[in-house]
Amino acid sequence: MNLESVESEIDRIVVSETDLKNRLQELADQVTEDFKGRDLLLIGVLKGAAMAMADMARMINLHLEMDWMAVSSYGAGTKSSGVVRILKDLDKDITGREILIVEDILDTGLTLSWLKSNLESRGAKSVEILTVLRKPTEAKVKVDAKYVGFDIPAEFVVGYGLDYNEKYRNLPFIAVLAKHMYM
Ligand code: 5GP
Image (cartoon, rainbow, N blue to C red; front, side, top):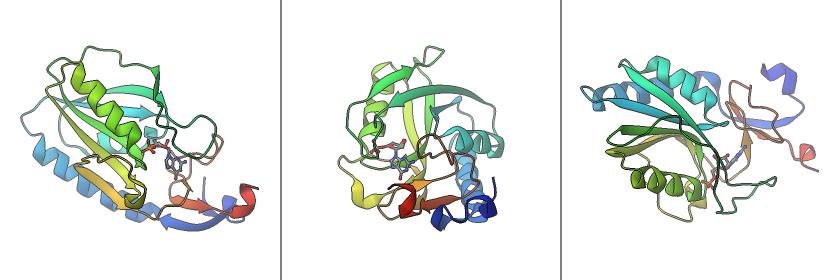
């Protein structure tokens, strides 16, 4: 969906489609370099990382496998609760696997820190994190994300997989919603 269609609903664009594409390509090149000769498994966190997963997987010049998990950390609100539930688990055993988690956003860090330990406890050989966005000022726990697209201010954003009440995931850019959309 293009900017014209949502112009009255958003406050401003935080990351443009071109900047997203260029930065993800840089990260993909880094991943290609770092995982050369290794057996890479991308794990996408549904639903937010669907776009990033699809784009990253095509930009990485290596054989790889893709799997998906769905976790809930938010409930219906716009604040992290710290309580993580698995809504959909991986299809395959990950013992000995080299994993790159692909996530849309690192906010408080609660979700990714929980997910990383969860995957490590299942016997993964290594677990790295790629996140498209990070809100550095919101961190409640320290999470080492090896690949970070953009650091953004602590505002609620939508687009490129990120939703507000399940909408806006299909915007090709990242934007701050207009205030009147919340109230
Ligand atoms: P954390 O556990 O790091 O606080 O939260 C991570 C999850 O919260 C993300 O995967 C995402 O689903 C949601 N989230 C955090 N910040 C935002 C935001 O600005 N916009 C949207 N749409 N979701 C967010």
